Image 1: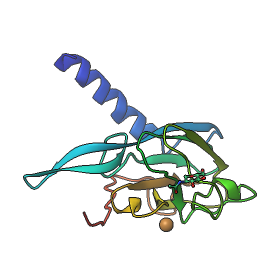
Image 2 (image 1 turned 30 degrees about the horizontal axis):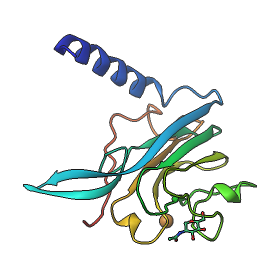
Image 3 (image 1 turned 45 degrees about the vertical axis):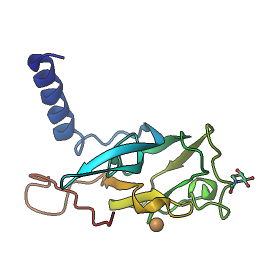
Length: 169
Ligand SMILES: *[C@@H]1O[C@H](CO)[C@@H](O)[C@H](O)[C@H]1NC(C)=O
Ligand SMILES: [Cu+2]
């Protein structure tokens, strides 16, 4: 892709990022998570890490209060896996919570599982992470829920956001 195309897409993404906090229509937001191995370089060291979509930390799930969220998780590794939406309250959708052997059977190699739930009466910055064996060591990311109402501070909107995820590797 040329620089111009990249610029266009960047501009588009910035536009979406700018508009996102203001739209309040209830909608279904879909994501596809591939649990897969990927060579990741940090501080001059490269190593094979378990990731979602090759990203470390994994992709951010960004939704609005009131949204229905559908996250299809495809297992592209040899081991079983599951993903848990940490801190998220599941109302009548316990099977979408994620802990292996607690709310679901693990997702087998080459299989998929779709987590479907409605984000109600909650907002803020949460975390998602793998909930099978040791996988959460590198399989995690942010789960951001924008409130339906404007923020209760002057101007009612955010100037900029920098999610900070603390983890070890
Ligand atoms: C993987 O998950 C399936 C259920 O989804 C289970 O029957 C099987 O024992 C698990 N395999 C391992 C190695 O834990
Ligand atoms: Cu957790």
